[in-house]
Image 1 (cartoon, rainbow, N blue to C red):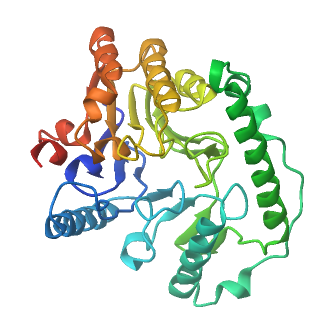
Image 2 (image 1 turned 180 degrees about the horizontal axis):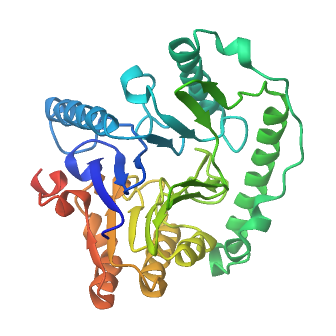
Length: 350
């Protein structure tokens, strides 16, 4: 990928929750998801080691930020954004998840805190000074945008799934009412410090194109943890894609989206197998099958960085065995971020 180079800045396989990545072309340097968090209590390592890995990762992210022109925040979870570090964001074009829609309540609150700090640091003003009036609008049924997943036959699980989708749609309509009542956080322009909301848009920097998906569910349909967007960096024929937090590819239509993008390098988070009590076998099977299909049908794919949630428990390879085997069979190099950097994943040493 001579036109595009990338560096996994910090990932779960290095010992702290993150999927921060620096992507560079001759035109622009892009830091994606500059956040980090300490591993969960069930991670089999002493707390002191977890704190050490988190501190090392935070320093690595700050160093990477000094080499970036653009910073991307795909959503407001702390392992994907930092609130607030002036040195991390100063002088950058910030492409951040729209905080006004396709967002849950907790992430809206985090976004308000983040942009309040951003306004004070770079605009010498309060967030309240720039808020706009609520802007009510109608939103389509999200299931209409994922027809494959919405109409998938789950056999004995169909009745339960239909009820979950009904409850999910009710939750979505409640979110819409909140979005339509909330003051609008605007895109910001404070000289060299600018914020844009990029979902569904394409930006150009010289010969480099940055493409952003519309909002995608963070996990299964109507996942209560909210929405994210994925980022593609393209220069010439080369494409790099960072899928953010799909939590594995649960949704068949998202697998199609990645296949259409047809990246040469794909950064993909695996399913959160460490949350066994929440990850039912039906959805784990969907994740594995959809990921295998992406590997088989993405004709350009040469490298898969398979990491993030997946690297939080020891049985990650066994639970996703078909993915690794499919990649080997198709001639796609599948690696954790640690392995790409020539290291052993921390979980394999615990």
